[in-house]
Image 1: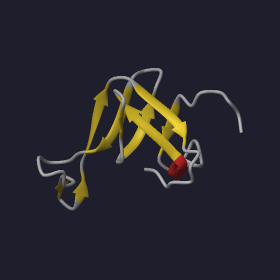
Image 2: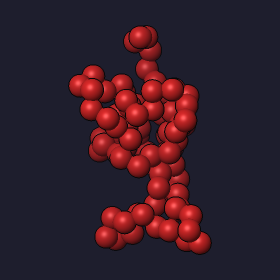
Image 3: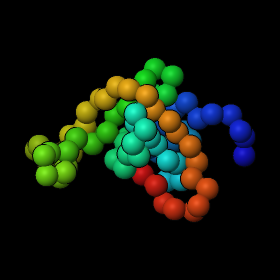
Image 4: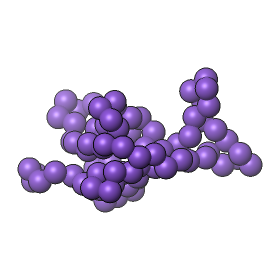
Length: 82
């Protein structure tokens, strides 16, 4: 395993170990990210309503692009991530 920072991740890869990643946005762990670009400062996640439920329109889960400071790390405690 390389010590190089992970700067990009997307569901389905790269990297292939998506489920083992810990993703933080402005210091807060995220659990429904679809894609993250650390260098450009954006991420795409499933959109949620005020009750924290996924937003579904025409039987399709909606997503939203968010901006900020992202961090991607490999979990080292074996906990399943995203």
